[in-house]
Length: 113
Length: 113
Image 1 (cartoon, each protein chain N blue to C red):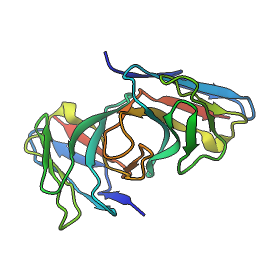
Image 2: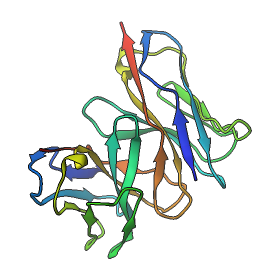
Image 3: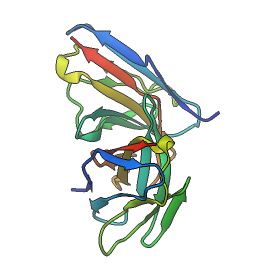
């Protein structure tokens, strides 16, 4: 089954404790993205990757890092989480860079206290 | 820049009522337009899409027509069911080769029996 898998689904952590949210896709897509979803703001792109070892900032990259060492995996790293990063996070993949639909993971609800 | 505006929710309807969720966009070029649906506790699923002017996307009884002259992509369904209760997002594809989708803020639909 074609899918994007994120882990964990739920995470509560404390300010400053490094964490990683994993994302994996099995569709051989070149493009992958991370979004955060906040009430009244819809989804906003954090980072994206066009292929292995090619990543770039999206609209709200501050406080986040990513890596793309393999085509299927695109982890999101919060080196020093802060309460304003409490949000619902989605990983997405797509076969192309423009005018194509994206496939989304189930989401990770992160709470930073 | 490109943007999407959706009608504010929540929208509450009785079962079998007619649904319209308004979506308008601002874009340069000719983006593809999408409606995504998010059921409670789940990720985003593509509901329908349209790739050029006057295209009509349809799925599960939902329809939306890409109207370039009014820059709109309103979602409609003739007879909603309780199972349609979800958050609906209108989105457009950013043509900057980043794989990014630009989302509206989302509209919550609640259908009562």
